[in-house]
Image (tube, rainbow, N blue to C red; front, side, top):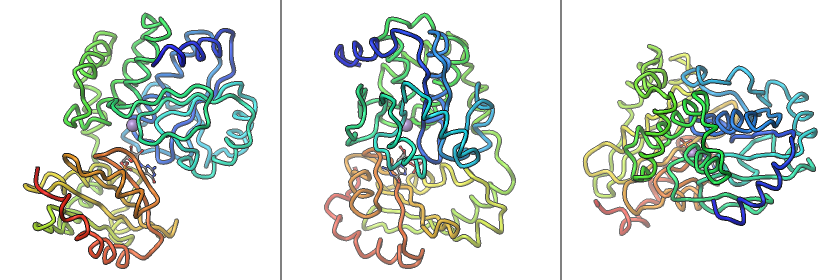
Length: 339
Ligand code: 5GP
Ligand code: MN
């Protein structure tokens, strides 16, 4: 975090504040880890904090320290709105545009609090009085560590903070596999382990809690895998029927797209998941090398994210979405080359 932003934040936190901390819709390990880690940190400085998430999150993250105190907007609309309206400061973490919080957007747009953004996605919007944005960072959770450091408060790192930040870094880097894991990311992870984050236990909590239904659904997803070798692309589809048949729960499809990306020669992988309730197809995109799925998601699916991991949605039917996808792909043939 640069000097100017650090000074602004120091000023904002110079007396006890009422703080609301917000993550993005469909919170993942990094959204939760960064928000909860920051919450424990700001509490240790004497501020009052509440973490508000737009909607619920998967069971495999419900063990994280502090999750029981999270207020979920979709479940407690009035309480969340009151909390945000009463806040002096609103921290928005792991997203950079107010359209990433679903219906919570109008509450944030109408509140009078000052905003601070901590985020690592591309193209940050301009709504905060202090914007700590760095697209090179592995995760927002890593940034919270640097944020504490910049404020000169690194010694406030507790076990609760460490476990949350480690979980966020681990999940956003695919367990330190993606190119966003820098030497600094590993140094931060080492400090978090020293502060009490037990890597093996955190890995087990996140990755070894698969329900039989999720495993069955993975079988169906892999069966639905389509490979387009000449375009170095692979995609997976899941219909609402297939989800229903396997008692789909939030988070059950997390990571499925990575199997498509793991196919030899594939540099671009997509999963299309039908969501009849919201009348959309949710789309997750992943790539290897220079092919920007952030650009692809922005151009075709009203979405965004990072160069190698992005998301978006389509309001067309699943079949139409797929046929359009197949028809636009050849335009990218020159970029879709094996690295
Ligand atoms: P996932 O595919 O796991 O949902 O998301 C991959 C990355 O893209 C995450 O960093 C996530 O925050 C971002 N992302 C997912 N969906 C959307 C979306 O609809 N819009 C934007 N701007 N980013 C998204
Ligand atoms: Mn993230």
